[in-house]
Image 1 (cartoon, rainbow, N blue to C red):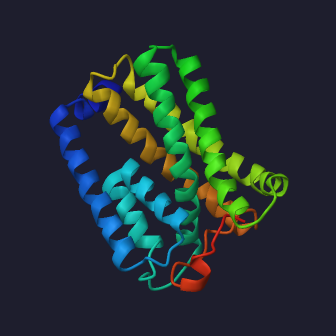
Image 2: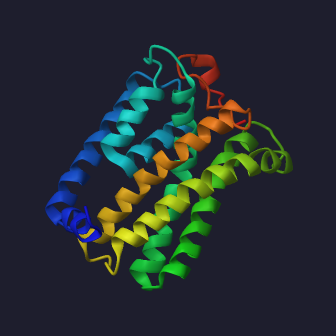
Length: 227
């Protein structure tokens, strides 16, 4: 399928409206489930799942059901990887959305500066949402920064390289008034998540990240953090 065919497929307000309806329904379900069946999950991780589903709709919901609830039958490296990448994704997504809106939507910048601004904001937000919980748990800033720098930098670079490239490539000359602008942003976010998942699997396997705790362990889950 050519680029033009892909753009034509996603450049419809009707299709975007259907997707947004699915996003709203998915977010509502996750909020309900977290409040009624998984309230033991740490508040930061509840925000992580809410934002993940906000960015990826039913895709994010499927990831939450697979890896983020106490109802999962077993834990595994694959599930830990999804919890870890979702935590990174929740922060990076804020930065990416702001970066694309500011650089492309408002100022119509070229791809180079759009990529620089979007990556910078994604990195700042992604990194902040990872060291924040560690500092809340009493870890000094210097130690939290040092512990998270390598692992989170790898995860963010992989995620945003794929997401930003996809968004700029698919979006083309679209502006904020075009369905393609928002559709390509949604597509890029989800592709970035899946691109960073293998990287997070390796980071967990080699002890650089911790997988955000097993949600079946109600005591441990409430105190889970990145490292």
